[in-house]
Length: 102
Image (cartoon, rainbow, N blue to C red; front, side, top):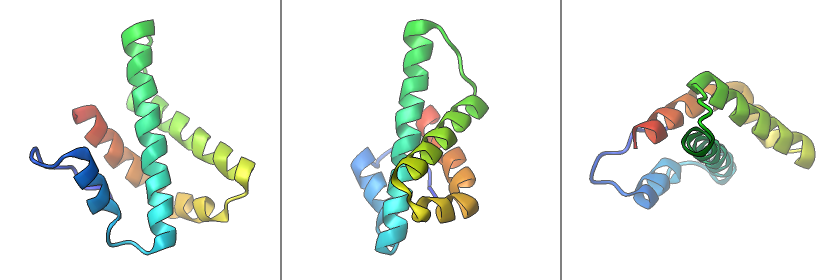
């Protein structure tokens, strides 16, 4: 799963470390989930700062899941579905923790 980066680790180094040991198919899926998570956390923070609309972790998680499923339906990716069934919830929760802390 996703490890919390140390203070000395920059984002690129942390990102590469998370994906380095995975086979190509799993690496692409995990990278996609990490991107959807980072994007939705960014949007949630912007909504809170600029629109004064607070979203808790459960709401952000729901938006991440919805975007992943929308991507799956639009592109017909069975890979995301398999990954989603087994790992997405824990992965997203850990990435949310990392991104909210940073």
